Structures are given as C-alpha cells and as structure tokens.
Amino acid sequence: MSTFGLVWANLFRHRARTLLALFSIIAAFLLFGLLRAVAVAFDGGAAVAGVDRLIVSPKFSIIDGLPVSHQAQIESVPGVAAATHATWFGGTYQTPANFFVKYPVAPREFFDLHDEYIIDPAQLETFERIRTAAVAPEELAAEYGWQIGDRIPIEGDIWLRKDGSRLWEFELVGTYRVRDDENAFAAFLFHYDYFDEARIAQTEGIVSNFVVRVADPERAAEVSAQIDARFENSTNPTRTATEDEASRQFAAQIGDIGLIMNSILSAVFFTILLLTANTMAQALRERIPELAVLKTLGFSDHRVAALVLFESTLLCVLGGVIGIALAWLALGAIGPSLQALLGRIELTAATMLGALGIAVLLGIVVGLGPALSARRLQVVEALRR
Amino acid sequence: MAIVELKQVSRHFSKGRQTVEVLDGIDLTIAEGDFLALMGPSGSGKTTLLNLIGGLDQPSSGSVEVAGQQLVGLSSRKLAQWRSRNIGFIFQFYNLLPILSARRNVELPLLLTRLKRKQRRRNAEVALTIVGLADRAGHKPGELSGGQQQRVAIARAIVADPRILVCDEPTGDLDRDTADEILDLLELLNREHGKTIIMVTHDPKAASHAQRTLHLDKGSLVGETA
Ligand SMILES: Nc1ncnc2c1ncn2[C@@H]1O[C@H](COP(=O)(O)OP(=O)(O)OP(=O)(O)O)[C@@H](O)[C@H]1O
Ligand SMILES: [Mg+2]
Image 1 (spheres, chains in turn cyan, purple):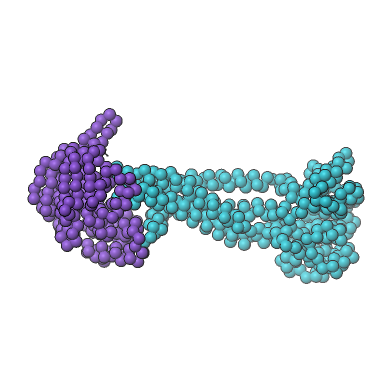
Image 2: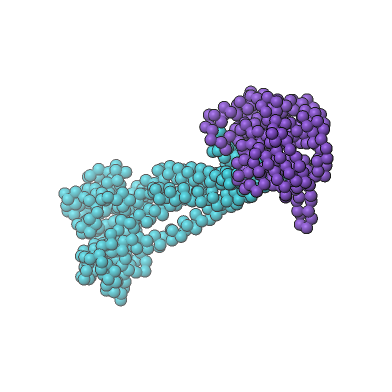
C-alpha cells in the first residue's frame, strides 16, 4: 500500500456518496468543456480578422441591410484600398440540420479582399464567368460529397424569387481553402448578380454588410469614423468596426454568450462546491477517531491534513478529468455538425489546463476546512470519545 | 537501564475556572524489558499517565524521559516522529481502520518510513505471522473477531519495531479465553522480542502476566505488587 492507496481507500469508503459527488463534478466539468469550446469558437471567428479589414454594418440592426450603392461611396473615402459586400442568405440544403453559411458575393472582389481564401485561379475565373456558379470550402464539399459540376439546390427562406419559386440551384465550379487557419469561418459562395436579379424587386440591391480593406492599418480607426460620418444622415446609417468587433457585435445580438456562459458555469460550480464541501465535511466527521489513530501512529498534524486535502483534490481532479474527457468525446461527435455555424469547435489546451486548475482549486477550497480541523485534532481528546 | 523515567509529573485539566488534578507528582522508573501492569479505579488517571509515557500528551509539570528522549517541550511534529519510532499503541477497541485489510492496517506505520513498497508489504506479513494471523491478511476488520482484530492491532504496534508497547486495557473487550491468548502473545513479545510493555488493566488475572503491577489512585501511585 502507498499513501495514495490509503487516500483512495478512504475516498471510496462510502461508495454511493462519493460516486454521487463524483458524478456531479463530472457533469460540471462536462458542461464547462462544452461551453468553453463554444465560447472559444466564437472568439475564434474574431481572431481570423486582420486589423487591416473593417466591416461596415447597418447601424441599428443586422436585419436591416444596406443598399449596395453604398459601396461606391465607401471606396471614395480616403484610406480605403478596396471594398466588397456580402449578404446573409439563410436557406436550407436538404434539411435544416445541414447548416452552413451561404453568401452571395462579387467573386473576384471577394477573393481579392480575403487573401487568406485560396482558390485555383482557373476555378475563380469559371466562378466569375458562369452566373449560376458557386464555390465551397474544401471541407464543406468533402462533408457533403460534392464534386465539381454538381448541382446544389438550396431552398431559400429570407429571399424569395421573382418566379415565386423558393428553389435556388447552383453549379459547383470550385473549392477553396483558408490559409493557415483551421478555425476560419468559411461560407458557400455564389454570384451576387445572379442572386440580385432573381430576387423579388422590393429587396433588390440590399446587402448585409461591406468588407473594407484600409491602405494603412494604423489609420483604421480614422477610416472607420470617416465611413460612418459619410452615411450619418442617410436613411441607412452605418457602423464600421474591425472584424473582431463586428463578430462580437453579431454574437452580442444573439445574446451575450460570454456572460450567459459564465453565469451558468458560476452557478454550476457554486453548487458543486457546496455539495462536495458537504461530502467532505461529512466524511471528516465520521473519521475523526481514525485520524486520531493515524496521529497516534506517528502521522504528523501536517501529514494528516495533507491526506485530507489530497483526498478532496483527488476527488475533484478525478471528476474534472473524466468530465473533460466526456466533453472531448461529445465534441468529437457533435462538433462537425456545428462547424458551419461556429467554426471548428474543440477543446483547446487552455480549456483543458483551465479545467485542471479549477479542479485543483475546487479540491483545495473544499478540503481546506476539513484539513484544518484534521490538523487541529487533539489525539487525546479524540480518543476519549 | 531505565527506559521510562518520570519525575514529579503532574497533569491537570482546566475547565473554565475549575481545575482537575488528574496526576499529582508521579515518580516512576521502568527498566528496559519490563512488563508492567497499571491498575486502579476508573478515573484514577491510568490513561492519562499512559498518554504521557506514549508521547500523546504533555504534563503540566515534571519531566518525562522515554527511550532516551526528554518529551517535555517537544513540538507536536517532533513528538509524532518520535512516537512512530519508539512506541506501539494497543487500545481496548483495537482502533483499526475499517476500510483497510488487515495487512494494510499493519502496513500503515511503515508509510512513515523509507522502506520500499515491497519491503513494507513483507514486514507487514511478518508481523501478522508473529501474531498468528498470516492467513487473514486480506480480511477487513469487520470480517474478523474481536480477538483477531486485537492481534492485527498488535501486529500494527510492532511492525515498525518500537522498543515500547503501550496498551490501554487490551483485553477489556474480550472474553476470558481470548484475553488469555492476547496476554500470552504480549508475554511472548516481552520475553522473546524484548519489548518493554506498559499495560493498563482492570483485571487482576491480566495483571498476573506482568512482572510488576503498579496501583494508581486519585492521581498518585499508591503501591506496587510484584
Ligand atoms: N482532556 C481532559 N479534560 C478534562 N478532564 C480529563 C481529560 N482527560 C482526563 N480527564 C479526567 O481525568 C480523570 C482521569 O482520566 P483517565 O482517563 O486517565 O482515567 P482512567 O484511569 O483511564 O479511567 P478508566 O479506567 O475509566 O479508563 C478523569 O476524571 C477524567 O475525567
Ligand atoms: Mg482509561
């Protein structure tokens, strides 16, 4: 037997009680792993952004959209090197579960502006030439088994067609990948011109936002202010931000993800703290005579305290490791289907280390009280009971 | 040679303004290799005296020298270390850890030594063999009779090879025959293994196994029978 064996045996003396505490800790860390992975994915979208790019969005609501005619005025703002637009399309491919982002774009402009998107020049040329053409990120094409030349039907929801049909059909003419960044946000892209002509007249010429490249990243703030100033008094005022800020604003409109997650996690860990603390306190109370015996045998006050602390930490770390392992398995299973929405969802090293840190901290906080009582325990007193 | 030397040892407990004199000016010398019985009415201070000799408690005044070490004034950490090397404790209610098998209970004191895991296990098995319980090494205390549990406790007390065994009513919870077996075992440890034994008992028959019997009454030693 080792000291570890002693602690382990003590931990599982009341199997049901320990397992109950363990399961709650596992559940908490599973939740922690999942929520952190999602939160990181949200941040990850923002991290792609270079500071040389700005996003011009409607000032008040992402629903409004902006007239495509803004683009020429944006391009005329000093310090703007290039601009293009993108439009939130919505739409369903086969079933709603097949979620990925779809943008009608101006092909050449769009790829020029996003130089991290890498496409074969011949394919880009074809994309430009054929009005019903589309290109997809490589992983997306692989996921659905699309081949070049395939016809891809998308059922529209936001945008209706003049002909009354909801069916948009595109021909896949190429694929692209995102340089260096596996977490990058990537969309299914097709021709804006084709889209604009086909949609019903009232909505013609509306895009969701503009992407702007500034000539000098140092002056991004100034350029951003000038763009917004230009549209200040128009019927479509704008808000210009870095891609970081823009995606955070987007997330903020969905709900304050970070705040919600942190609130949930705080509540969960607080509950776990109380529950585990209670388990440990109970375990200590019934073990007082035994701890006294250990002291009689020559275990020092500190050593006995360390045993108690080790036990609570072991419980929490065990729960943490299992919980994170389960989160990892769960993300492996559900991650791919969320990838289109949030980018690659996975447990980062930081999340795992964070979980370990929290587990150790939890173990110490929970075990500190009992450990101190164990240390103070007077052998003679305890043996008299 | 004296292995225990108590000089003018007093121990009182204060509860609020009240002070209870439990031991009062005890002088006691025990030679190495002795088997000493300590008798006296309930509340006379036997356990208190034993705790002082075993380094579990400190006197209010006086000097306690055991196994060549002055215990008065030692820090709690030093005392713990000293106990682990010099004293084996045997209690009336065995005080085994219920979650551990007999062997692991016996192995406990060895966790404080530098012995390797294998050696610890082997020593524990030897100790269990000495008390005649080698075949029960894997049993938990709950699966053993009172007498067997006390044997495990004795094995635990001797496994680190201390010079002194301190026993507080070791047969108080056992029937006559089992008690005799335990007392025979203690005698064997005294005779064959040279352990100095100090045993508190209420039972004159148990005391008859010892070489000396001291009588304690109201905190003072009142006489000795040999
Ligand atoms: N920690 C303490 N605080 C207060 N009083 C104590 C304490 N320890 C012992 N006493 C008192 O000291 C007296 C002697 O106690 P002790 O346990 O030494 O007696 P004993 O001779 O072992 O008795 P018994 O045969 O019943 O075990 C008792 O009156 C007891 O109440
Ligand atoms: Mg007593």
